[in-house]
Length: 231
Image (cartoon, rainbow, N blue to C red; front, side, top):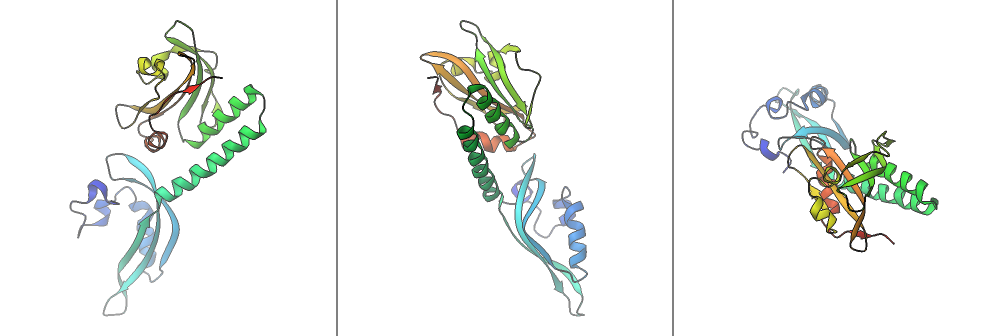
C-alpha cells in the first residue's frame, strides 16, 4: 500500500502530519492548485518514510482544484498511482544492456573486470562492489578491484577477513552458497562465491548501508542461489 504504516489516522487527517517529509515538495504544488492551476506528471520522485526508513518512490499523479459553491478552489483532488516497480525495472534493463555492451567490448580480463565492477557500483547508489581473491588455506581475501558510486577505491591490494566480505557467513560462502542479508542490522548486501572445483577461489560482493534501502530490492532480485565456477 502507498500509505504503508501511515494508514492509521490518514483518512480525514492533515496531510502535513501524514506526509511531513514530502510536504516541502508537494505543499507549494497544492498552493498553485488552490490558485486554480492544476498540474500533474507521469514521473514524480519523492523520498518518503512509510515503513520506518526513507526510500525514493515514483508516482504518476494529477492535482486538480475542487471548486466550492462560490466558484473558488477550496480543495485539491489528488489522483495518482505508484510506478516505482516500473521505473526500477526499466533502470535495471538499461543497466543489463550497458553491462552486456561492456562484456562484448572488453576482451582482456583486467579491463573487463574494472569496467564491469564500475558499472555495478554506479548502478546501486552508495553501494560498494568488491572483487577479491581468496588466499588458499586462509580465512582472508585480497581485494583486486573495489568500486563505490562508480569510482575505484583505494582498497585495491588490501587483505581483509573473508567474513567481512561474506556478511559474517564465511562457512556458507566457502561451501559455494551465495549469501545475502537485507533488512537486518546496519548493513545489507550479497556475496557470490566463485568456485574452483570445491575450493572458494574468489568473491564478488556488494554491500551498502541499510539506510540506502534500494539495496534490499536489488538483493531480492538477485536472490539466494548457487555459486559460480571459475573456468
